[in-house]
Image (cartoon, helix red, strand yellow):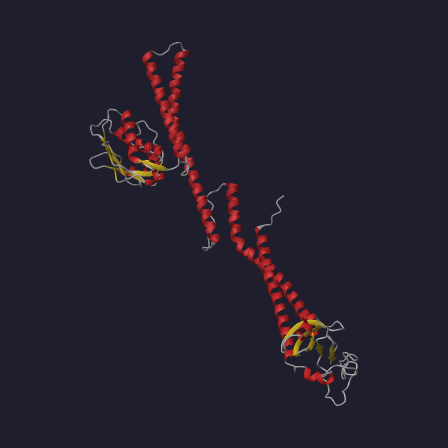
Length: 481
């Protein structure tokens, strides 16, 4: 079973996913931007304080640290005014209670005042050995496990001041912001899904109409169905293409129907004649009264001619039934040679008819056999209508234009537009042999070679056929000749 989703559901999911992803990315970026800004505010508050050592120096050992001195070996981290000794030290100014601050010495000892001590890291100790004035921000924790933002400054060789500020407010603000952004993202996903469904329905409505039309044509084979086209977007172009396709299919089916009907009509006469002649032979043999030699020879000759006519008709039908792409690969053709070969064939068929030939070289890309047959058909028509006249058939080829002129009765002007139709025959030629497909084959062969053909009544009587083909009077260098 095919589990592939429909185009509408896939488009809805795609739009919803794209919008949801965009909202989620924006929410995450917003969270990080706010976090960075809050940390910068904390850092600015730390940088805006006094340098720190002036605050705490009176309460810490300034010379060699000894016993009994706050911050010395006997009292590490115990200072008046600190958590264990509230109040003021005698003779000293009060320690600000809002200043979480401590001195860090190069040997790792601390002198803490105003808050819970902050844990020291190797990076802090390394800073005490650096040049004075250097400072570093980092996240740290107090001895009680509280997260703080720490500013460590090297104030003099071997001594650094560590100031800190709690990140509890920052963490609370970020948690609240994360909840708000998560809610906004969830609402955005729901809105994106609704928008995706609306977009898919609106965008695919023309596709739905096109699908219904295609299914209707497939079900009913009604090629006259048309899709209303609105606008000039891709869906409209698809509708125009579908209408063009159904029009072409309807035309092709109509041509096929006409070809079958015309072929059946044309085949009916020779088949009836063949059946009549064969019945005559059979009846004469069955009755015990065989035909004399001369009548029997004439009858057999007629049968042979009728079989040849049917073979020609079937071959012509096969030639015309091919599509535009069903032809031999086009190669460079010496058209003057093809015309000369066609003239030789026409002379063999009608030795009593004079054919005047004047040819100039002309090379083109095409199917030599099809072009030669087209010229033969033109010559057959010219010879057929000039059989009882003394004037010769004139064949000229120059500058890519072939003309074939006869001196027959011509064609009525009102019938000229139909001369290249299949099975069309002039009123003056319906009593003559032929299938009515010769000129249709000429038109197809010339059209396949990219040329044009037309017939007109010549001055002084007869028909003048003109064939114009693109090409060159010299052979292409690529041919290697």
